[in-house]
Image: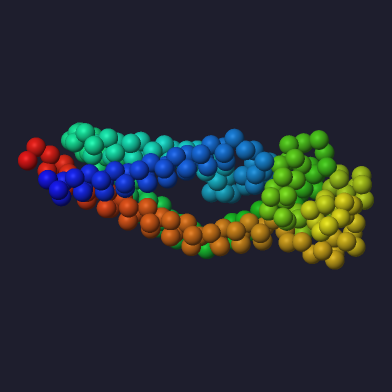
Length: 242
């Protein structure tokens, strides 16, 4: 009896954490989907972009799906443990098992394709610079989205300030976006050369590479939690009615 009560408490704690993690992921997914002022929003402006890169635009919907499933899973686990409902516990176990298998497959894909990030983003160089020199400075969605991206990432152009040469903005005002300089309201050629602000390509690649280990650690933690939850749920399932 004491062991059963302890398992219920552990099950409740496990699934409480999973529910909160799911709610947090769901919130991030909604934010990414609603917020068009991001790097993902510019993918639609680039013609003939690699298909695998264009799929990044759907990352918000993916996060919403994962967050929703985790939240439902945590709810089922908590309720199943408290009410000793076999149907809920079995449903919880099946959902966790499916998610665990999907996470393992996703981790393998990330490990395989993570080294290709620089190559894939680098393949967009000519196309992205072409869009900048054609659209930046016009009254277009691209200008607004790219300004927001450069501000958020603290970068300048795709490679550097020279990407803006010949653009409507540079042609009209004879200077560069303020993000290409530091501590100035007007960014001239000499100031842009002196500031040496990194391009968004390098900043984005570094951001992805730096956060790969963090994401891997979080994934391992969630996987361990899921395994523990599956074990506890099956023990409770078998003990109900005994």
